[in-house]
Length: 252
Image (tube, rainbow, N blue to C red; front, top):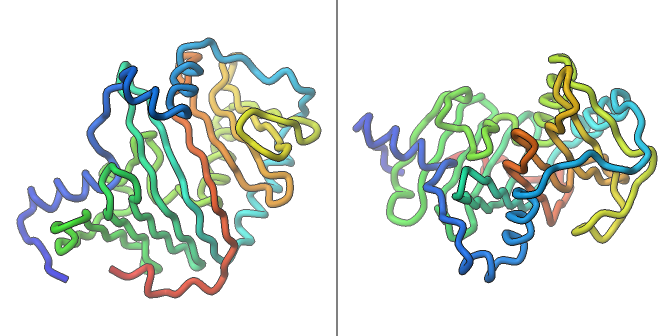
């Protein structure tokens, strides 16, 4: 693997790994993408809290964290859609996780196809772009802003255990959380799910909403809101629990 020693070029590659140019939300691309059209409609409509019967989610969130922390390894696919003004950013990829705390993300959609970012067991993050630029690999500090996704979440918190920790942090910051008393039916999911909703401190404004699989207690969909409007949406599919993922996947 070749290494680039030109600092400006290295930083440009690092920044491009997880954050890319926005795509205009036009009638043409929403017609060809029903999911994007549905999300755009949701973004423009006022967001309301779930009308389902709900209870305090503190214990439920602890159970979610325990389930996520117990995972030895898994793979899944994801799609993240971020709305910034009149523009839409779409990210699609495959995800690998293995204890002790190793993460690999590969971009598989049209955007940045072939780009890879890896958090190794040594705590270092390495990555490269796709195509001809895959020959240039860089090392980035795990807490670098260059590893923030378009939705604002860092690579190092993108695994299920990291997400559970983030949710716990929301509660420590004064947010309140409710979860449906029982799994319920929602649009887009073939099975009933728990709906977990987080509200900002001293406010009735919905901050986060996530659909939780009642069997695994892992998220299936995640919605972020800003000012009462949908800001970002992530969906996970093709989850496969696998503790035997090869360590070589986390070395580039």
